[in-house]
Length: 334
Image (cartoon, rainbow, N blue to C red; front, side, top):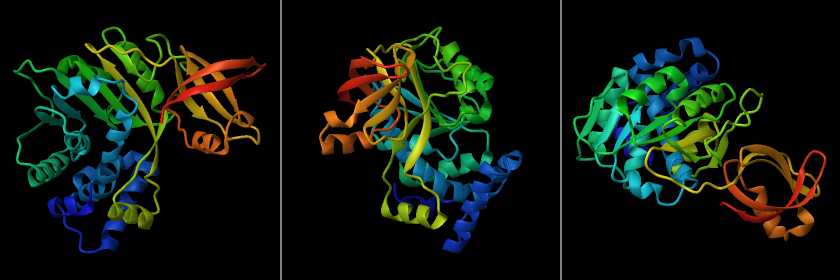
């Protein structure tokens, strides 16, 4: 994704770079400080366009990174599905899925009239294909459906998200949501309901009660993304890091089954002089792991320093300690 791909199709054209940066900062303040007025930006073409330039462009790469974690073969099944972008905004994840060469028909469900206008203008500007838009959608065809929540379940809440799932009745569901402690209880409520009818594909080793339920802990992941030079320059001028991103990712399927990894890295602790320290969900039980640096080459240790929460691993326990397990690393997902 390049800024030059987006800027001709904005519903508001900025007069200067300074004006754009000021609008991005205004939106950021609404997201982080003035959340009681967060919806105000949806009524302003200037702020909708600023959101599109900054957040659409930096969120599009998330989907490809997330799919590196997904089970082998699932994407091939999803390619034959209608794609439903729920809470689509300007169509961020529709564009991401399209760029991955997937999807039959594309549907964007969005309540904001300005966001729908912006999404339609981008889609029609970039592609010569039909885009379906609405606030809700009724399907007359029998095509399998892939439903994606892109930072929307957090805003609508668990009950509304579950209501959409019930009405749409998708074959597959993917959540890419904020990696925050506040969101996690909402995700757990959704997860517990979906497990009645769906297979869990990610991140859980087993379709059982989450070990973080009713605790202060929360399951989230990190991805490292790369941006086009124009976008990277914009993030630097806005003084906002959009390369290392925390997420809450969960994937479910009614039809696809996968042999899930039994060990999932859920938290990376600061390295010690002697070891890499991780929290791992192993068969839905949380444990602290130590990987001793003395057993690694310098390059292996450097590589482990770059492993992020969300990766699957395979280990062999060397020694049981009082508060942790010392393990030998057999495999780690890159």
